[in-house]
Image 1 (cartoon, protein in one colour):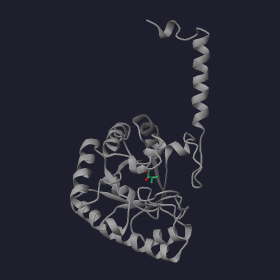
Image 2: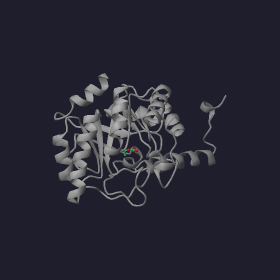
Image 3: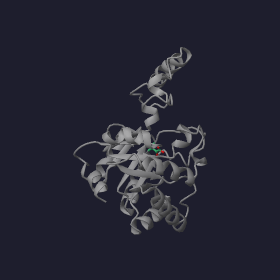
Image 4: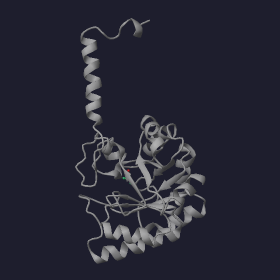
Length: 257
Ligand code: KIV
């Protein structure tokens, strides 16, 4: 609860820094710089090369969640519920409880608006901290992702959905692929922090898939920026290793028994 309060307190004061992690090693490195770490079901595409996040299972989220937990000390740890694991209140509660028990995460993220309001409300009443997710909903999209907020009907609906999930008790929500003036309106109206991905600078915080920002995935998505070229670092290290082995420089005395 303390970590959630810290996130809430940042609204209108300072940007909230969020990233994804799927393993202990990455979590350990990024934790120092983040406020929130998400084990996103984006791991389906980023790690497993699935063409949809719908193939991600609860067991996969739990195993990655357990690994990430070991690397997170200070950030709020949030885990995504994958597709078809929160269709009813009973199903959602049972699965969320299992995720929290097995991973010791701090909160759960659910994708959706008005359709899942009663489920959010139910879980929040059961003391499960919930983060929402509006805009592009990868679990619901078949085919290409299109940003939201061009049409007036889309804008009106998203403002309504934001209000509805906020009222249901989310402590924050992701806005994915949302037109910048709409992100601004929603963020201004919201009493809880909005976290953008492809939703402009107008949100209270920002999230990216870490593998994308490091240049590991070679993502072509417009809202992704590569801040690093980790492929180059890997290649440099592996080249040096190959050279040392070929030239019998490794293993040397120091690395032998
Ligand atoms: O699955 C994920 O990583 C996400 C973020 C991109 C917000 O939902």
